[in-house]
Amino acid sequence: MGPDCKILLWWSSALVSMPGHLNDYDFTAIAQEIHSDESRRQGRSMDDILTEVTLAWNGTDKLSGLVVKCPGIPDMYDYERLAHGAGPAEGVGQIIAGAQKFARAVDGFIATTSLCIEPVGVPYCSDMYRKLGQELFTVGLQAHEHCWSDAARIPPTNVVVKTFLDNAVSQYGPKSVLYISFGSLFFPVATPQLIEALVNTLLDLESPFPFIFGLGGKLASLPRETIDRVNSSGKGLVCESWVEQRAILQHGGVGWFLTHGGFNSISESLSQGIPLIVWPTNAEQPLNAALLSGEPNPVAIELLQVRTGPQLGPSLRGGPTITGTVTDASAEFKAAFDAARGARGALLTANAGKMAKVLRDARAGEVSEELVRLAAF
Image (cartoon, rainbow, N blue to C red; front, side, top):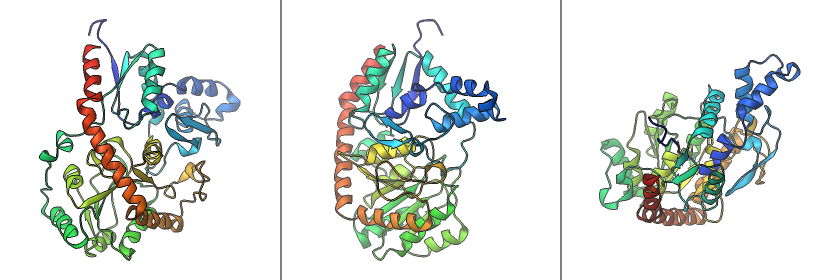
């Protein structure tokens, strides 16, 4: 690799979360300063302090209710920015500190987003990084080619899944099914009682909301009794291994996707015009949820009462104090499902459909131009 070789960092998430992770603070320097002061160190190792600085994400090692800003996303308290439902963030301090060091050395960044997703964030970040002498390339949402063409739609090959979806269309109509998945890496392991409440709410709905719950992820699991109860109810289907997510989202029976809010899942859903119900569990997912559920063209409903740990308390956006209790989460689940199948849901579905068209058009326009610019860089 010669001196003229360009080095670029790949960013697969909401672009506006990138400066906060990589540029706004030097987590290593902050942790070293605290560690060098015995009164502030308080017996902690450098790694422990670095982890706490990373999780506070506000220039200190403690959450304080500081109001934080991200372009294009509603302001929020610092403790709202990071979800804790997936359990302890092992090694996160070293990972982000390494990424920050790398980000200062690269020639530019490739971000899997575009203007139609982040009309405020893309211009802001492009200008910011250009002033730092770095180039930003926004190459659009990344999903399999089958996601972008109606002619290339693929049906589920799993007979049980396909039969459930086909029967739901016959019984309840098109776009009547809720697909649930927390991705390949995450699951709300810190709040199993809320997962149980989610399932109970769906099974107890007076007007059924048929659902498929995929458990293919690394941490995903449900009690055997719950799985059997769902699969014998006629209202839901729990799949205990990997499912064909693209094929499920392309089936005419699916109308909503309940997701952790990872960008790969977001990309596959929005490419199909499927609106989202977002249950953030870790990392920058609360920012993704806030971005997609915010005005003026929301495509998602964000769940708030599923929060746990430091995220509990008031939200800067108003509404009830977030308790994370089964009672309050269950009420929010029901309200979200009612909204999804009412006027609010119709609006979000229409917005998601419009976004899918814009995203597809962008592949031949804005995204293509960015790829040409990247190739010439």
